[in-house]
Image (cartoon, rainbow, N blue to C red; front, side):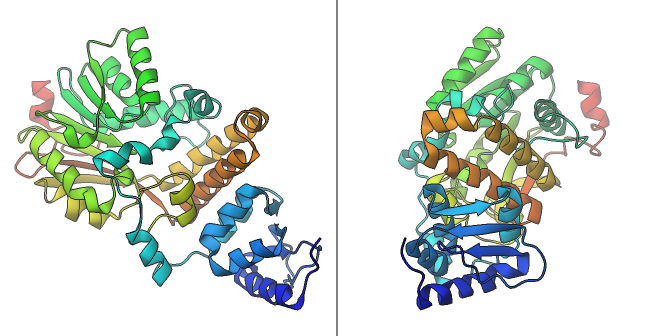
Length: 400
């Protein structure tokens, strides 16, 4: 064991001053700690070596994740409360490092888009270990906080359909369809036809098999292509969990798609996405290890760079961030229950990476650093699809 020296203790004291306001205790590899607070800590960060300590000083946003995944940084106690406490220390990303990292974020060109979603192609078996049976990898909707994950995901699918005021015979384009749960739900329960686009071949194979099994191949077409290549008009455009992968520099492409595809009279759409209250890049480590190219936009960025250029008017906005915190809590519980199988199949470093990613995401929504927006929109010259959230327009109801 490397002896703890004067410089190590000075660096440790510097890190401890940063984390002590949220009652997190730092411990060095010899068992010593500069923690001096009178209240008990919510948990301990155990630093295994000098290089880890230096990383936490120089670039904590990156090295916290890197060293935790590698086992060089440990958390004594439950992971989630410690990560949530540390999340409360986050500030606006105005440093030179944050600005440079945001500018260098992986692009989402047509060529790069498939590479940037590699995490979806880890294998369906991996996600079946901890998602709900329909493999819905987006925020659920808990009408009652005690709902099961499966029930809350079905409730989310239906919430989206009701907000869109789907009617039998509607034509729907879905951009980024995941494993197909929403497309199949829309077809089965609302009598619509769906063209669902995705660039993850693992997900598409699963979705097509489900459509064939359920006898819905005539209503749902799962298309291996990028959203930017959507052609033709539709009554409804929906995207759940895809917008955060588009990237600011490509928002004009999504605006162009909406402008040419959503029917000018009677058309409508919904964007469901992870966002921010203020502009801020995604965590550096998460961009590197889980979501390259991702950017959670603000509402202002979406309205000014996507909807307004497309000629769309915002009809309704809802924020479901606490629903996402609850979703992630249940995902983490499912992930923890499958720890042994995940470790034996994918390795300990992979397991620790995803454990931290899920815990950090839960903390971000619980503390308000992340938001989950659902935005309903319609062409500017078209009447809104509903009179209120609860009731459809009288003439729409009559037409149905």
